Length: 565
Image: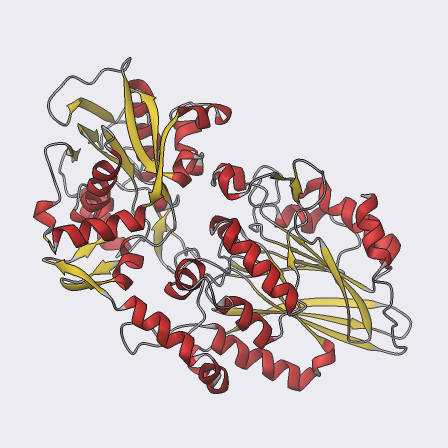
């Protein structure tokens, strides 16, 4: 902790005014590249930072810009064509996000797990550019393996609203469960508990702030201390000397106040809400803290800001509309939930062809995406495959493969006799913007397999549903034999726990199981489409893909699909 205290000593030049004081803290998180209000292939309007800026400017005019602090809790560099373009295509210009953050006068940005997923070349570039604008890229729990010191800036001190404000920022500590070490070399990520309290205590002793804000790319969670990736409510319930916990990651719109002293703010995702915290301090020093969410009207995009970045939008639009091939019939991701379908056949076919593996695992990465028949352009690839996952191949035994699939369908399907075939609930799901029926568990973990012939029995309980009859070509499938299995880098590193809890492979053993690391899966999909020229869903299957289906076909799944969609 000594090095952090020494750094703090350099920042104690902030004087505070007397009398009543007022501070407004504005927050965003999980923007995921939702920067422009227009789509790249049509005329639709959507949520964007352009609209967020309208509200930010309005608050600054109303409250006074010297009384407003603007923060972001991470996941800025992934999720949209524009982010992809400036991450990997135009690597010469200053990154668009860095320029947007400077234009909007963000005061600090916290690093998210998807920012780390973009790779060191991207996040180090953005870190340097943000720093040139006076904006820190915070991740105080990303600690160097070799020096024991933070790899990124931990905190910054501001003077706003006549008060000294200490802002600390933290990355999600669960990154090793999702991303390979090559994306975070020479570092590790410490749990936010007890690290944050220790940092707060040490820095408050030196900085002596009037207001302390912890900005963490961590989900709200349940406050039970059991989930490493969702520690925000744990922080809210246990932290002392902190006024705001600004959190992110789980895409849930939440504000929670602990009396008048501490508030939690989570704005959801994709520029849909703006968080607003308020601090009122009397001249005697008594403080009152409150928090709320502002629903962003997507139609109120800032026209001046739009004009300032029009050339960037045009560049991304031109890139997005590059033609790559034809699609003979539409693809629907929701078809994946009721059995084998063309959308999943495409993903499996690409994984098998690109890797040469015997078996592939894949899941639908969007709950209700549609790619219409006709000319395919680069933009469609983001609908088919929205993430920058790499393709990995692992060694697995037949027993591990079956246990893996049992675990997947255990989350996917309801218990027999429950009245449903799919594991669904009548509950709003802010992760996907659904306000009625939704899946109990994340559907991006509903893996199916290719390279096998198997059935999944809806009548049987979890753990005994999958019956594998053979490999795709008809050769025997043995629980004792070893096979090569293609999957995403997210899954290969333990994401979704299908390998660890499902197949029973220890986390520490996963890296030794890897026999192949390949490029991003989206790139292989692009190359497959270009090679095919005209893509017909009926042509996706090959003898190597095998077949699977639910049994019996009693229409129960179709009834649940009607509730969901």
